[in-house]
Image 1 (cartoon, rainbow, N blue to C red):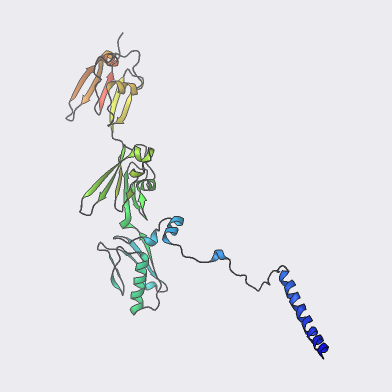
Image 2 (cartoon, rainbow, N blue to C red):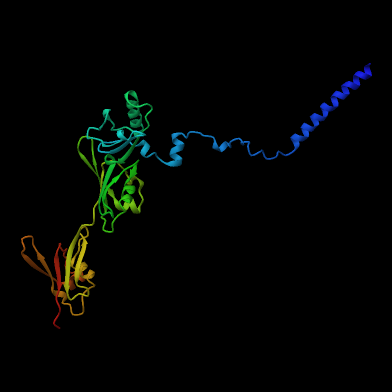
Amino acid sequence: MRSTTVNRKSRGVVPLLALVLWTSSSADTPPTDPPASETPPPAAVLEARPLGEEERARRFGPRNEDDYRIGRQDLLDIRVFGLEELDQTVRVSSDGTIRLPLLGTIDVAGRTKTDLENEIAELLERDYVRDPQVSVFVKEFESKKVAVTGAVKRPGRYEMLGSKTLLEMISLAGGLDKDVGKEIIVFRSLADGRTERLPIDLEGLVFAADPSLNVEIRPEDIVYVPAIETVRIFVSGAVRKPDLYEVPRSEPVTVLKAITLAGGTTERAAEKRVQILRTAADGSRTTLVVNLRRIKRGLETDPVLQGDDLVLVPESFF
């Protein structure tokens, strides 16, 4: 009886052992591609994860329109999906409000467009529309404009989204013109009604790249780039290039310098009898005679010319 029992158990163990061995060998076999109907698990890189503000700013820079605060005189385009009769294009009034059909007056100044979208949706859903989808688009950023004028290629008023530096605003205006002066002036309105004047040294800003001079520009600032103020000097007579010369007012021009600009005197020049013809504001004219030869030797003062002076170098008869 015992041997019979053992044989029956053996017969039951053998198939079980074979099944285990077959399962183990199947696990060691490289997996085949799943059928087309099976969907592979999503890769880890596709996992959605919201970015923190610090990481978002590092990757994409500061927020622009979404963080923009609506201001006075901005032009807003308001749309309600599926309800064209509620669509409106409105300008923010001087008191910071807008007026919409059914809803009346709404304070909008200082708010983001997302805030305004949510409020309009809540007001509509309260009495008129079920689950309204509202969008707000700022068409004109009038309250965040900066005027750039003077010696720039495209003077005008420019919209200011996000923060902007002085150099960025000048770049928006096409860059500096060739006749730019030595400084840039930023005019800024203060809360007490006064206007602040901020002079910026142009050489330090552009050529020395001093970061402290690249100031942050605020809405409603006026960036003024003065052009070089010039005076006209006429040089005529026995010089190699008689002509009208425009020179910076900030750099005084003497008789010797003016004649040098004109290429110097000719061989027939009477350097001892150089004349300065000067016209006063009342139209009267005076004539000053200087000795250019003595000026060259340092024996006589080289007089500084005034605007519209005429330097006449007469010719010698011998």
